[in-house]
Amino acid sequence: MPVDVTIRKNETIDKALRRLKKKLDRESILHDVRAKRYFEKPCEKRRRLKKVAVFTNMLRRKYENM
Image (cartoon, one colour):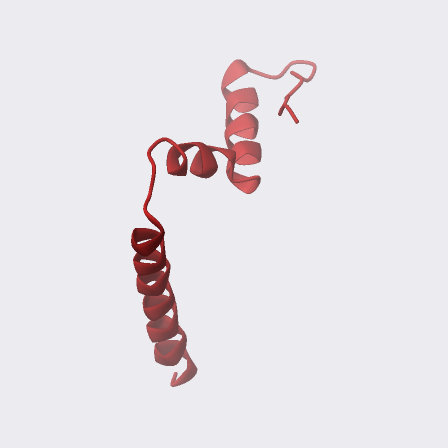
């Protein structure tokens, strides 16, 4: 599914590029492409996801106490 941005009337290229970047970021297309650039072993993937989960839980506990 290609992502396309049509340039509106009297819109600059910079604004159209900004909208394209936002759309790519929302759909996490660039993140997926970068993640699939190199092979990641299943154990490395589990380790990375566990590290992210620990960090999120730490932040959640920190802001619950406020």
